Length: 146
Image (cartoon, rainbow, N blue to C red; front, side, top):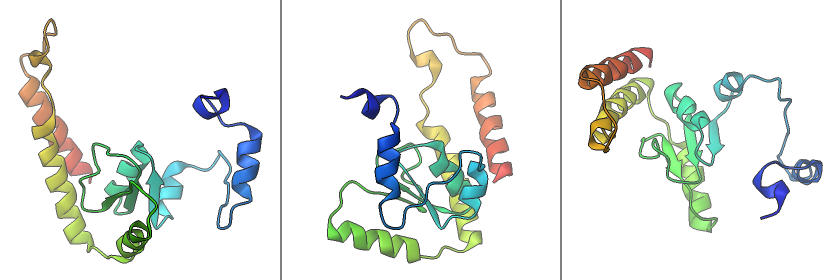
C-alpha cells in the first residue's frame, strides 16, 4: 500500500475531496462534539464518533462492524448498491422518540456487560477480585450519563 494511503493523506487527496459535490472540509479547530451536535448523522468506519453520536441521540452510519453497530440507531453499510442507498435514505428519515432512544441506550449499555471477556479467562493475566463490582459500577455510571 502506498505511504499516503496507509499513514496519512497528502494534500492532493484533500484537493480531490474538495472537488466532490456536497463536500465541505472544515477546520481542525472545530470541536467534534459541536459537529456531532449539529449533524443529522455521523458517518465513520468504526470510530468513537459513531458511539458519541448515538449517545446524544444522533444517527450513526458505520462502514464496518463496530462494537456498537447493533444499536437500533446505527446502520452498517457494506456496499454501494442502489438498495443500500435507499436503505440509508430510509434510515436517515426514520424518527425515534427521545424517550424510546433513551430506553434503547440504557438497554444497549446494560447488554454490553454480557459481551465483555473477563481478564481471568486469559492465561497468566490476573484480574482483580472485585472485577464484577467494577464492571457493574462502570455500566451504572455510564447509564447515568446518558
